[in-house]
Image (cartoon, rainbow, N blue to C red; front, side, top):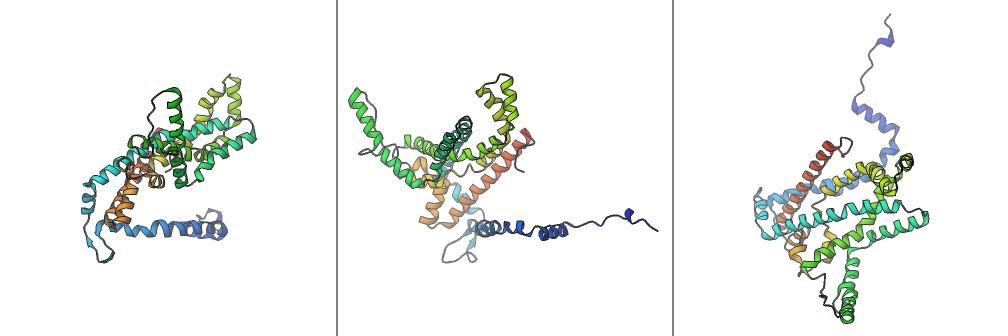
Length: 322
């Protein structure tokens, strides 16, 4: 008689394993339904419209009857001086936001973590996070009230300094000068977004083993050395992942902010790909060019995400997202 214990186990296919797991944890899988519907309706279904970037599309002829032009639209797009200017501005603004905006939440998180009073710590964290929920149009209104030459607070203070001390400080509208607009753009971006970025880093800091700090204190390390040799090394995987996400979105220079704050006087330094797409697509009805520009931006973002992730995996195998 053959021992049944020696019989090879029947292999279970991946599909049957999934069906069994679905049956056992149906309610957990049901939680995925709203997210799947959102991504299907708003992310994947609209991807069919990408072919507009390869056709001579207009509202009258429709998508199916439009002539196929292939990459001719892209060649026309790349030869346009306005697109070249928008592309360069996109890179410059995004680079400045990464240069100044990426380390700021890390620095804020380290400083907030050192606050010993729990009540004051919550107050500080809430205070720095609140600007994230203010609309850019409201922020522009605040900046206009500060920079307006006739009634703005900043020009009035500078005028008083000139009259009181006899110095010569140029008084200009910082929102209408090409030389100063980028500075206002970056400063307002830091004020609005830096606090919100501390949420991820403060959550990662709370997961650090406190025995590491105790060991550092025994070795004579003060607060600066504890931050440098304990907190930052423990935050390295989180920092790398956040950097991958940030570099991947380098082509998103901030449409809402620039659309709300820019004007015809600073368009040469403020126009980015998103505002260019909006202008030629919604205002000039050149849908094929707008789609081609948006697709170009998306492809660049995908390449940057994959490239940054590959570099991160080479530097630290435990980092990265894929």
